[in-house]
Image (cartoon, rainbow, N blue to C red; front, side, top):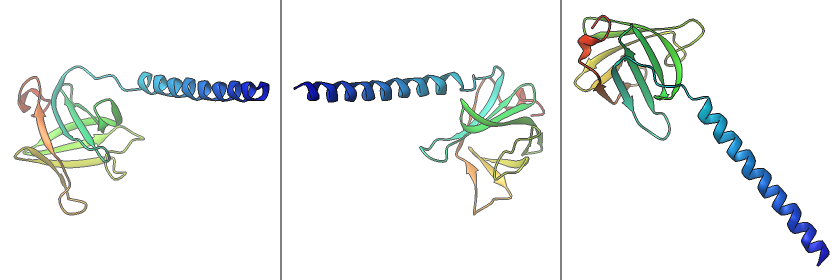
Amino acid sequence: MRTFLLRLRKLLLVVLGLVLGAVALLAASILTEDPPKAGLCMAASREASVGGVWLGLYQDGTFAFGHFERDIHARGTYRFQGDTLLLSADPGTTISRQQPRCRFVLRGRRLVQLPAPNGEAYIGYVVVRRGARGACAGG
């Protein structure tokens, strides 16, 4: 009986350690998320469990690019040249396929990357927030 209680105690300590570790990792993940930035004038996203993309353009001429709005891996500046959106990443970061610069053209409700890497690469749909494209810098 005594050995059973000792094994049960060890098992409970291991389970408690795993639960506390998982809670600590979750808290660290939440605390390190990028907070949303004010002044968003246009956003484009393609939601997916794997390979999701989010691009936000801000009124001050900057952009944020990542897998989700709170998981940003590139920031930089943007400008419009006709119907083409030109992105330039901040030094030391890349946007897509390890490139520091990227071009998109607006076709209907899609932002299509130029040149298309494999077939037609696009960000699924465009959502305009807080005004039309004209509210974005250079729009």
